[in-house]
Amino acid sequence: MDTKLTRRGFIKGSAGLAASASAGAGLWGTGQAWAGANDRVNVAVIGINGMGQNHIKSYQDLKNVEVAAICDIDETLFGPRIKTLFSDRNKRTPKTYTDLRRLFEDKDIDAVSIVTPNHWHALAAVWAIQAGKHVSVEKPCCHNFFEGQQLVKAAKKYNVIVQDGAEQRSNPCAQSAAKFLQDGGLGEVYLSKGLCYKWRDTIGTRPDAPVPQGVHYDLWLGPAPKRAFNPNRFHYNWHWNWDYGNGDMGNQGIHEMDIARWMLGVTLPTRVSAMGGHFMFEDQQNTPNTLMAMFEFDNPAGAGDKKKILQFETRHWISNREDPMWLKPSKDDPGAYMTSSENTVGNLVYGSKGYMAKTVDEWQTYMGKSREPGRSGKGLGNHYQDYIDAIRTGDPKTHNQSIEEGFYTCALVHLANISYRLGRSLDFDPVAQRFVRDDQANAMLRREYTKPFEMPEEV
Image (cartoon, rainbow, N blue to C red; front, side, top):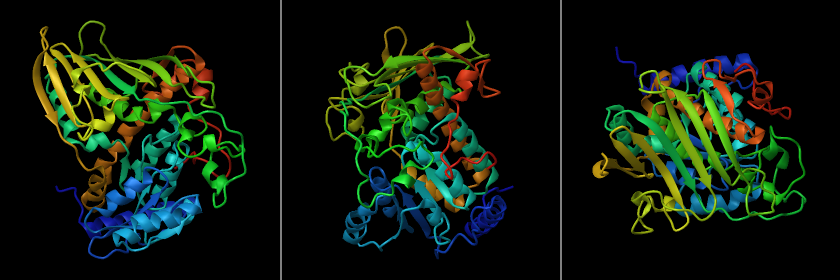
């Protein structure tokens, strides 16, 4: 039987179920969610200072998709963004919101793209899902382990599409690499490495300051602890503060962590150990700028010790190249932002027959003891088109498995950060999704929330 629904049938079922469920939760009374004629998808982008601009332009380039609303806590951004991204491109002026809760009440909005700081990702996604909106949430999909669990539950419960921000999953390059490994191309794959060598200078030290005009700072903080405004904990540099970010392993590194886990064919580990530090600089960063993490996974089908290893390393300064794959001839190469003079970002995978090196858009294998060049692949996809296609024709029960994959990858980041912060190795039960006999570590799987910005215990 064909499990795909017609466009109108899917829309009707999606809106009806979401409206009923969200009304029961006492949040939003969403009615018919789809107002666009002829299959137009009305998208709202939440967070327009950084990557949100890329999201806006990417959706505008798709057929029969309109960015109908934008949302940001900084009102001063609306004028410049509307001019450069809408008026100058002959696009209709979008609605503007400063509070995403008011956006979720808008029945004209079909889908949202969440491009906020990390500490808002999962809560914004769950609220949007409960409001009957389709959701694409930037990486990492959760700021802590518990939030990821709740996001997965919501994605399974509500009949809407939920996309994880792991863009490389849409690339033919990554897809063909995974298939090559699954088909036994490297034999028994026992070790997978993620590389995040990205030049990061000091953020310096800046004093607390008055909240800038036009900024709704309480909304920016949301679920995070109440603190005075500081420009070093605001635009972009929030990545290096535990209250809002997850360090570079949860920033750039989450992409390479996802590939490392995917290529290894694993979900949650049995053991994690991480060490590193914040080196060279006396500044306000409190996440590590150099971090080495190791994860053990059960491998009943393997030989020897019946386990697999994932190794992840974040470096912030001068580094080596690891493999010729990172010696690109031109800065104009599609993957060159990953392989500039400062950066080496990608993956290495090791098997019984050889090893694979992978960048964002290309992979190459080296076979046997002599490391002869073997199979290779390449290709970039369109993450945004995949989201819209899933909204139009997808089955949430199938498609939303991607957000569970996103959670597994985020989980590795969170577990490694917990190990680093506690300064010791940790045993983990992948079935119970808890640390083994370790109350201190288990307490760090979640956080305290500032009311009313609380992750629901029941989604």
